[in-house]
Amino acid sequence: MRHKTILITGGLGFIGSNFLPFFLEKHKEYKIINLDKVTYAADVSNLNEISANANYNFVKGDICDRELVDKLFKEYQFNSVIHFAAESHVDNSITNPDEFIKTNIFGTFNLLDVAKHYWMDAPHKPKQDCENNRFHHISTDEVYGTLGETGLFTEQTPYAPNSPYSASKASSDFIIRSYYHTFGMNVVTTNCSNNYGPKQHDEKLIPTIIRKAINEEIIPIYGDGLNIRDWLYVLDHCKGIDLVFHKGVIGETYNIGGENERDNLYIANTICKLLDEIKPKTQSYKNLISFVKDRPGHDFRYAIDASKIEKELGWKADENFETGIKKTIHWYLNKYNT
Ligand code: NAD
Image (cartoon, rainbow, N blue to C red; front, side, top):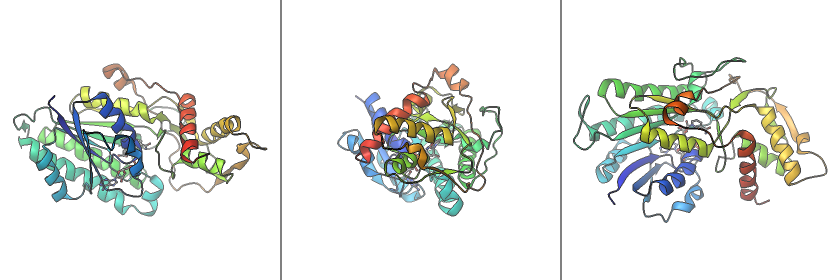
């Protein structure tokens, strides 16, 4: 079998480490190189299940390191890139935006520019055998800013990022766009809503609620708890990425979201209710919920119109929030050994 070689960045993070086992199992003809800097957000044990897979290789390194990225392209002659690596936590982007600008903007540019060097002879002229080489950029719905009570983000919604995180992701999306228009590179971008599921970093909302509840600590909820996100089970995101990577139209962007709008208080209450059933205590876990000072610039509502990927590529989320959260709680109970 002739292997296609794909560079995956940030594969030790939450989404990448859910994507890799799924993708390697589904596409046995691919050889994967995972380039990850192993920041605080990475967890090497996230990929124990594939560490012995002959089609998988790990390289520790920074996407901003031009020499390294160039060396990897030379050595492996990548046919494609699927780019997950990013600084991803909004709170950290408020206290320490520098890393977000470096990794999310410069790092994306660096990868794309090296790919251009290896794949293109001139603008709109791919090198021989590089015609189908694709750069898939993973992005977020946060680039669209915030919604009021109604409306949905479509691929036509103007960008209006509000946090340093979303501004850095928006910038990276524009760089990708420009390499399509200017150089004719084969790029696709997916903008996804909030993911949840196994292997998410402890700092994020859902793992925090589960961990604090089982440790019988205060469960902190920002502001009045009424901020709304469109929650998508991570494996449904991975399936969407797989579809767009293989079938998406060059230069296009696709929104991915589960039509599962839930506010933060609902999320906390649902997790507490399920824990009351699975691991009952003398009093309900709900009594641990406590409202804390809101995050500055906290976007009120995100919601995705996913009809483009549904109609054009046949994507559909398999989980809704209520089914996905049960799987998620069981995974974390196992992780936290309770
Ligand atoms: P994460 O923070 O869990 O993981 C990021 C990974 O990238 C880590 O393994 C980290 O070590 C690596 N990394 C960071 N900087 C790097 C660098 N300079 N060089 C190489 N590796 C580096 O993030 P995630 O939640 O898995 O998100 C993955 C992608 O999906 C990001 O681009 C994010 O913007 C996007 N996204 C995330 C969500 C979500 O809900 N988590 C939703 C939509 C889009």
